[in-house]
Length: 199
Image (cartoon, rainbow, N blue to C red):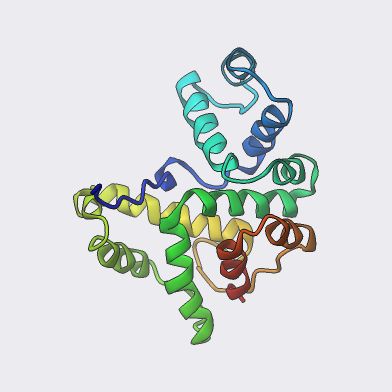
């Protein structure tokens, strides 16, 4: 029996909406590996300073988006900024169980109890609790835990659940009808429920 692992990519970066639009376009065009290399490394479509950074970001986004169906990619590529941000958020949730469980427990509870804001320590407490499920968490460097928490709060600010990553003031997520419809159509029930509770 294999031990449970969260296999999270949260430390790799935030929602990366602009970059995700480019990756969605490559997925929709059914690009082969040579075309991926040309777009990401040679043409630098993700606009990164170093090829290694571009490659890492491209792979992370691709793994996220491949958890969703092609109509999500189209909405991400062709939609306005709010739609693109919400689809990127859904893709990140689909790839990161750790993020989903944080939303389901800590953030949902904050809305239910009508807390004004999230606190920085709540991420640390959440990770300490989840270390009982995934022993690897206990071995994560303090700097990695802190960076991951910063990324999560920045994502929540980008999608509008927090007024800013600095204040961490809570505000309801107003899910766009087109994103809600995609989640319903493709039966992403857990993601749907998660988004519904963020208000």
